[in-house]
Amino acid sequence: MTEAKLKYKQGSFEIVVDGDYVFCAVSKRKIPLNELRYWNVDLQEAYFSPIEVEKKLNEKA
Image (cartoon, rainbow, N blue to C red; front, side, top):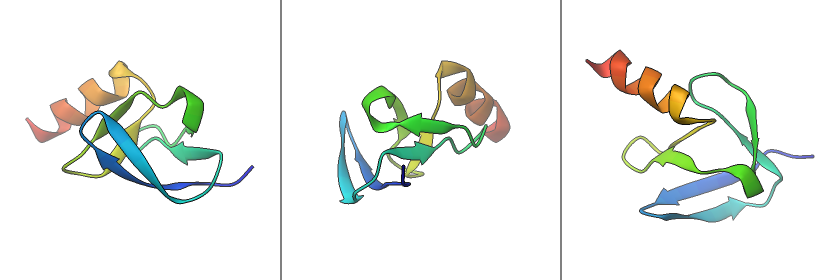
C-alpha cells in the first residue's frame, strides 16, 4: 500500500500521484481512498470522519 497525493475539489478529488490511501490532517490515521468522504478544498486536507472535521473547525475558532 502506498500513499496517494490528491487535489481536493468541491464534491470530488483528482488523483495526482496514484496510491491506496491518504492521511487524515488531524488524527494522522490512514484513509483508504474508497472510504474518503471528508476534505477541505481551501486547506487541501483530508479528514477521517466528521469528528476530525469538527476538531479542525474548533481549532480555527
